[in-house]
Image (cartoon, rainbow, N blue to C red; front, side, top):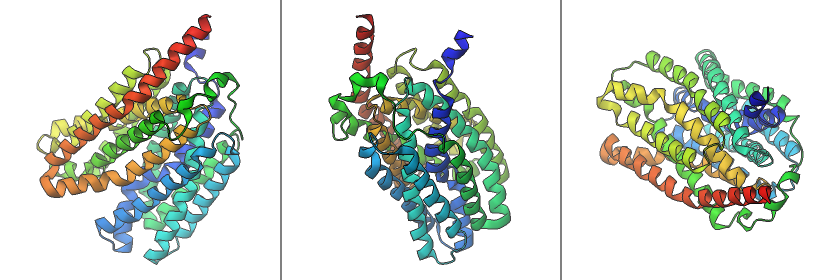
Length: 397
């Protein structure tokens, strides 16, 4: 029984409430992204560039809202702030379903981004109060993949039956369900077991380690959406039809459960550096595999099957690393904002590269961003290593 408890998180309430805020509300639009783009183009008559701009605006406001509240995470009432954000997002989604004007819809999507940004910042900040942030982050991402499996089917059905309005209603209903675990969230962080780390100089948002961590999160997310935005187009090039691709994407979500589950179970048994570096390199290799797979159906298929597995494995460790740098949750909350900024800008970057030099140039871009991510992570990883050594020495004293 003791061995089983070693693999479990310290608090399932902490895991569920953090997941509901950060992912069930904060990043729900990321899961709906492929459906939203198609629905916006079909129902509103916009082109790909206009649809992408509409969705990017929402993510930019998510980033701004989470970045603004990040410095307050040490003393802000997290549950109240999350509930306010969730209610704003739910209301804006419901209103979006009945708005025919594109201009008004754009305003409502920006309002939605503000609500999701508040929830995203608070959910991520809660991870910092855990004794083992890597374990909590791992199980959060397990639930995130489980949510992905469910909403992929639900959102596809809603779009097929009711179009864009159905998608917005489906998102509002999903967020409303997330209110239940959010009510269990603690108002303030319990950092009594991290007293010695609260005063650490590296916890400031403008410190070198914090800026490096935020940059790494931005680059990691940009690299991901640089490839993900065009994965369907490459699949059609290799000979898959839309229905088969849908089945392929759904199946890879199930495989994706393994990644964060591994992160939760393994934790810091091999330190933080090795899992983080492996995760970033694996994500970069998978992105290259399906972007450059237009001439190889086998390479494309194998790479697609590994998307969620590598992404959620790496995201769990990156979230844990950011959480370990500041136990008040300010750094990890700010990192979440830069994650959403990367999500928003990634497709634009790869789109420009593809227009200039095809998918091969986009592949070089993905490789360069992956390398830059590793470079940005060197400072946070070295700081985390020093703190672990200091904790080990203190416990032996």
